[in-house]
Amino acid sequence: MFPAPQKVLIHRLGSLGDTAIMLPVFHYLNDIWPQAEKRVMTNFPVAAVAPPLQAVLGDDIFVDGYFTYPVRMRNPRALLSLASEVRAWGPDIAIYANAGSIARTLRDGAFLRLCGARRVIGLPIDRSRREHILDRQTGLYERETARIARTLAALGRIDVNDPQKKDLCLTEAERNAATDILSGWAGAERFICFSPGTKQEMKDWTDPNWIVVLEAVSSADPSLGILVVGADGDRARSDALLTHWQGPKLNTCGQISPRGSAAVMAHAKMFLGNDSGPMHLAAAVNIPAVAVFSRHAKPGIWFPLGDRHRIFYPGLRWSGGAPPVERNAANETDITSIPPDQVIDACRSFLRKPESSDLVR
Image (tube, rainbow, N blue to C red):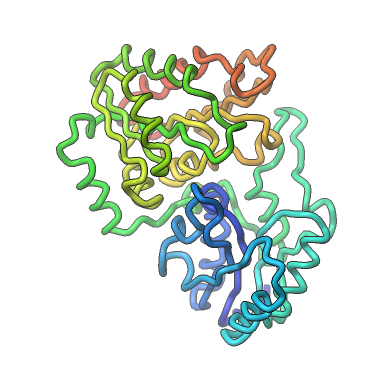
């Protein structure tokens, strides 16, 4: 183990999901270096519909500050200005927690040294640390979280499966705000969280499939509530989908922050949606997810942390759960070919569980 540094620079790019899967790493860094000042170098904003990393980590919860990294910026003057700003702060060590080609890795490593970091940990120079390990028995590739943990092995073993290490550390104010949002809503006592939005069209299961699921789940229990989370751009679409829900409904798209959404989701019985940032936030507040994936990435890499979720990936028999569930995935070619009836059954399996079950709450 290295001598305890006074200042730690963490290089991590991404938005909601990219940040939520990193929570075990941020927890670990705080465990081993509790007194160190930590700042993250990250991109602001990631995309028009994607909140920055700070929206997940918050202020003064996991880290002490942020540096704005100009993604795809090729202006030498801007890059030198950022390097000078970071060097003036004076990092003792830099933690690299990104993926990419060897060329990008070497470029980023050189930039971190230009920023004054005397040591850089986590650069995946060798190919084995840039690629995900395949479990041939399940057909799953290791999660991106586990791959990054391997690149940081010089710091010690990071347990990415520890349930306590994916905790968002919601503040009392955030929890109280969630209670206020739910106060007076007819569905507050028993509801599911739904998020149909996604940044990429290829990851969208599409409205006809969602409508079949919403109608079936709500008709089986007309008193069950549904609460939608997402960006402001998801609001109109969500309103249209909610017309197919019989019970109490509440659309919060664009009205609360990502951490606020997570605080509200902590009261839900389950999450339902596409592979998305809200799905990862749901996992971070310990509610099970029924999530539909595309083939945008290899199976497993971006699956939510935890082992209680039900995952639907085109052509993959493994479907998550504890113990693991297998399903009929024959003839599935893409995300839209995943059958609604299997997703409905997964939702019902969570909603049938006793209210006191540890598997649900």
